[in-house]
Length: 193
Image 1 (tube, rainbow, N blue to C red):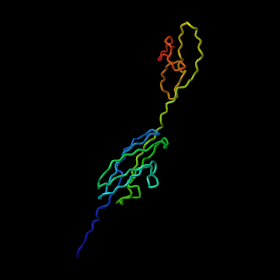
Image 2 (image 1 turned 60 degrees about the horizontal axis):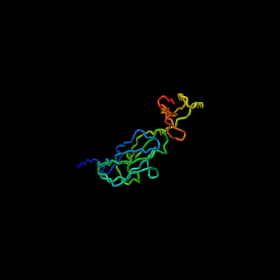
Image 3 (image 1 turned 90 degrees about the horizontal axis):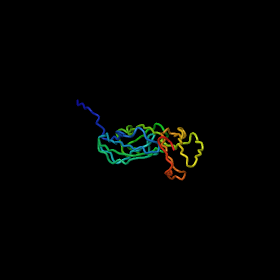
Image 4 (image 1 turned 90 degrees about the vertical axis):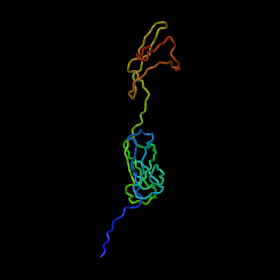
């Protein structure tokens, strides 16, 4: 009698995966989320040219992607580092998920494992800071001065406030925007004319 032992051979097909994603933890709404990622062939044979699809908050597919990268041929155990960016203008403030899927376009590459092509990372979209102009909080009473007489006037604290709670810096100009005449001085730190 002759006995034969069979051993299952290792797959000789490519196995494409997104090995890692490097993206910022947060981005200001309206700016671009700039990221890099590593595409890797974990299989035992080369993979031809293919595409990686990119989406936010759902996995990429042929009918659902917002960006993609062309990925050249990858040898067995080969890697490529790629980069891309996505505008956050249409995203709400809060937590979102960036998805990248290797070989997303009609499965160009027949792989040994089609279930490991997607990797994701979360990031936060923060509100864009808007600087608001100071406002008059308490109007100043009209002032009458006698020509030739010396006068001192202090702009009361709290006359102007900043909606963003920024420190205010005071300056004084004529209503035309021109500098004050030489006989009229304004101390910016004490608010005194």
